[in-house]
Length: 124
Image 1 (cartoon, rainbow, N blue to C red):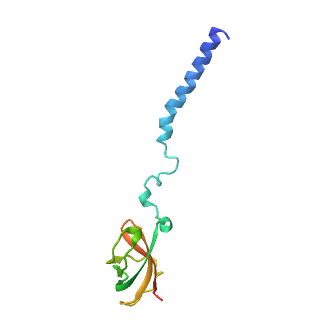
Image 2 (spheres, rainbow, N blue to C red):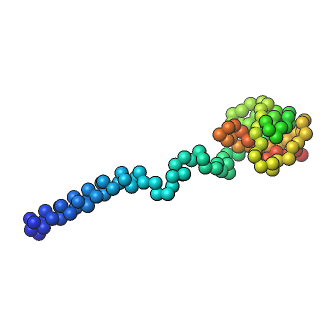
Image 3 (cartoon, one colour):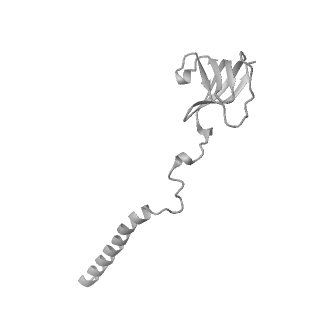
């Protein structure tokens, strides 16, 4: 290949690389129609992937607004001793209220705001 052809090939490659180098920051800052996705806190959280914990306890109080207070047995997976604490109820009224003093089996998940019941049933 002649010297002139080598220079032309080098100039063409340099020009092509310059176009990609200049275009990359512009493309990275382009919206691409996804402006609402950058803030994931606005997205609904799917709790189905959250770890679910299971325990037994006794209902101390039940309020649709403030949650369910339970005295529960130790929960080894969380290194929790037996204690009394309040669990939030899911926003959909899928869980039916149980009487204070009821012995229960329950499941819960951790959410951004604390712990939420996913299931609670009378102990058999």
